[in-house]
Amino acid sequence: MPYLLKTEPTKYSFEDLERDGETTWDGISNNQALLNLRGMKKGDKLVIYHSVVGKAAVGTAKVVSVDAADPKNPQVRIQPVKRLKTEKSLDAMRTAGVFKDSILFRQFRLSVVPLTDAQYDWLTAS
Image (tube, rainbow, N blue to C red; front, side, top):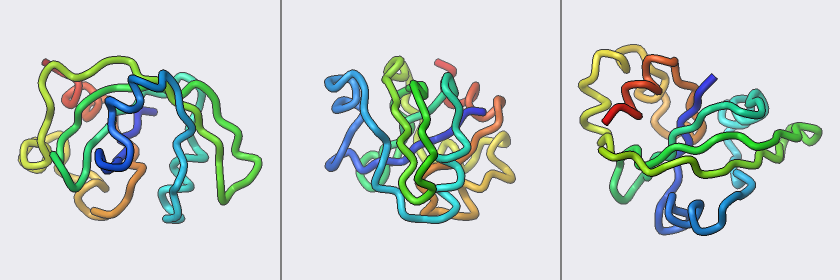
């Protein structure tokens, strides 16, 4: 299952992920977001979304490993895949039919959002 991961670019940006090559996705406190994080599997596709500043999907990544032994602090390692050729803004997502019933617009503060394959494809299309 693909996921959208929200991050504030002033704290940790897609560029930081590219520079680091791999990181543990942490700092999650919302129970629903933690459930989504724990549900990830190695190889899952990710879209990195810059919140607060930019408000756009900017790149893709993948799950390298998941250790959910501690349910309050799952250790999900991710790697960057590529920068999107065309960033997808929050406004564009809001008006795209593929996001009509998305939890993304029902729980705005959710930082780990499951995506459908169609939503992932729309976000990553040029």
